[in-house]
Image (cartoon, rainbow over all chains, first blue to last red; front, side, top):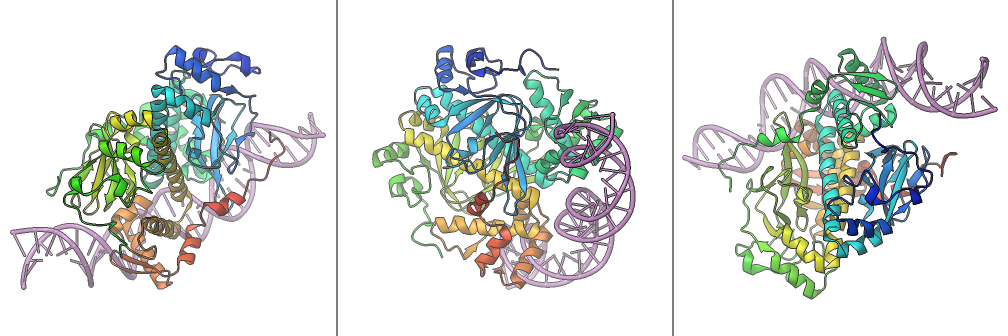
Length: 261
Length: 261
DNA sequence: AAGTTTTTTTGATGCAAATCAGGTTTAACG
DNA sequence: CGTTAAACCTGATTTGCATCAAAAAAACTT
């Protein structure tokens, strides 16, 4: 399923890769940097030992010092709520940045945990800010990434406040599909890195509901599921259920009212 | 109820104020800038004519060019969903920045509408980026503000996926109270700038439910409501219902597991 | 490979909140 | 100022999903 070496096993990550040769650079921080600038960025980045499934990148409350780019595998962000429950706030796939919501904090506001064997690039934030002084492109790239995350969060808020169980799961699957596609994987066939429980937690649904919706989707030939393996059989049907993407909704505008400026 | 001139009526905003003399500067962009730097920031900011209730600051789909700081009044952000429904994504009070989620977009991804007579400072984003080149403090302030919004969004996601109707409304009221307090208003007595409908929309509840919860809170002497006027009678009770703030939750940590790094 | 734990699935039941319906109050406006 | 529309409240009913319970499947252990 993986194309190229996206998911290549790298036990010596330090010597293995540089941003310049990284297949993810077109989706990650280096976007829109020239070769020289990428090289400068590269110098401040540390490649860490791969995390095993269940290991933490950082804990809620740890001193904030770095942001991380996922190289392979996947990460979940979660917080512990007042009543001691886990609440998942995000899943991160390769090329995505983890830890941005801690920038103005002493400590990370959430924990980050590997869902599978995962490699990351560690970016000391202080040095990133230093470097950003000289590289306007890098600066605006950080802003763009954060702005995108803001928009994704608003989308998530809409999902949680307006969509029913089927729409939520359909949105989740099409969203994952899109992200896999951009990373060079098949948009139709992929392996879910997270459990049903985690999907439910993230989507504001009970595990049982997630399971039931999966079964229903299978019965109506939208998808075929085998454990964590998912095949999307009817992408259009799934997309319609999910609620069409943003382009469409932009056409629909609120009718202008009399007292309008 | 307002203290000082926070909510002062200003029909000639252009000559009226500069960041240096603005009572909100300690909450807004100029934070941590010295006098000279504030002056530079001031030069790129335009004070617009006040918006009347219901007027738009911008529409979803308008070309993105400026972010705005609310000076007085309040703004709601909303998007139109695929099925033509309005979905409110945020309310903005004085000193808060509007439009940050459009930074990496051609166009604003949401609309912004005045909930009452509202004055804003208009900040052309291109010029802000220019200025940020020379002012590292300004740069990190923008990052901090965005990072904070990210965290607020995660909080909102938790509210929407885990909290029941009473907890949502309690959270909403205590949150507003805190924000009013920081801005120099009473945390116990304030006027809701938005309708029950808008509260429900934002909190993922039906209008009727919001209304019922208000009544229940009133019956249990947590608050006294008269239309849009709210008095908080038992702040502690309300806070407990809302789920205690972040400090508490940081103490509770997930028990470390065997396979931990 | 047998045993143990965890995850997933399926069914039955209960409940919180949505929806529906009606009445009341408040705001808007000619 | 009176008329109309919008916002708000309250009760009755419905319903989607959570919860409870328990079996089946998968994933670790030894």
